[in-house]
Image 1 (cartoon, helix red, strand yellow):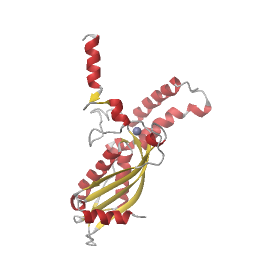
Image 2 (cartoon, helix red, strand yellow):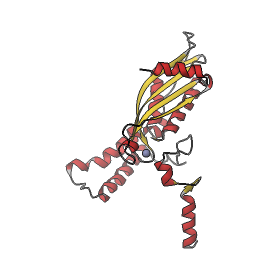
Image 3 (cartoon, helix red, strand yellow):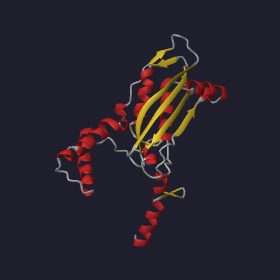
Image 4 (spheres, helix red, strand yellow):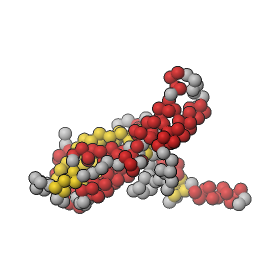
Length: 232
Ligand SMILES: [Zn+2]
């Protein structure tokens, strides 16, 4: 292919529905429910990943001109690698998915159950800076219930990925529907994105709210009831 052809190919590749990939990142648009993963994402072990990331992160720091022989900086590449794989991005690995056990709804409780103010920390997939927020979850039992702490764990698992808030909301909702075997679930997320407050537009006061209402929750009275419970 000649140079012009190559340039045209590159141009085509950097566009999606008329948006450049830079625009997509800056406007925090997202492209699908599933976190985009390579088919060979888990061919190498977590240990190998940590080693590779440490080397690459050291390179980034070096390019920025930081002195890696300084005692304070020396350990940073390894620390970052460990943090990425074991903590803040551990939700990329399906092995870390919480095991959900279902119990019979012995109390015959048939109203909505709300677990509110679940604090989570995630990271924006476009800038790799924190998203800090609260998730509120509700469901109406179809005859089965799960332990309350599992609701929390489901939120944390999907938060520990590079994320966009809309996908996080929908991934949690899908997981709840599958686990609880019902469509009657609701998820509301209220979060601050550091890529909006600490850089770019530098708006420190705005927050982003997203929601998912499935099944029974698609009625104004149910939504009202839920929002009432969420009032402080
Ligand atoms: Zn961002």
